[in-house]
Length: 68
Image 1: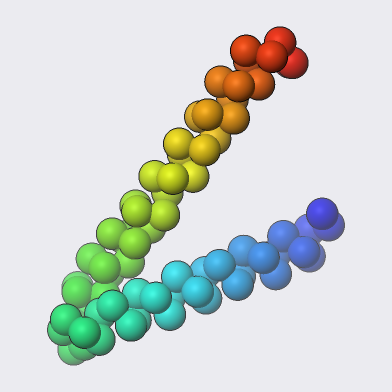
Image 2 (image 1 turned 90 degrees about the vertical axis):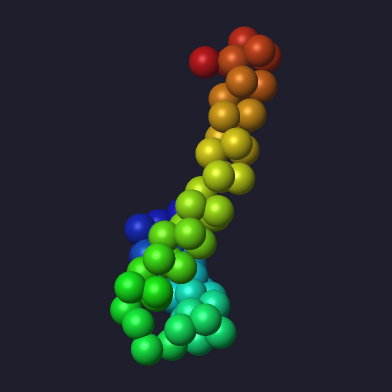
């Protein structure tokens, strides 16, 4: 992929996470920036866990096959 495609993909992911965070925050306490940031961190952590598991599994399977 070209760098502009990466920029577009990353910006769409950031926009999506931001919208998800705003929706989750509006259900709890919409007037607090601290609540927004706490929800954002929780969403980012829960998003990062499956990505880390997938990358780890990929690296283990790649190493077992003997590819370098």
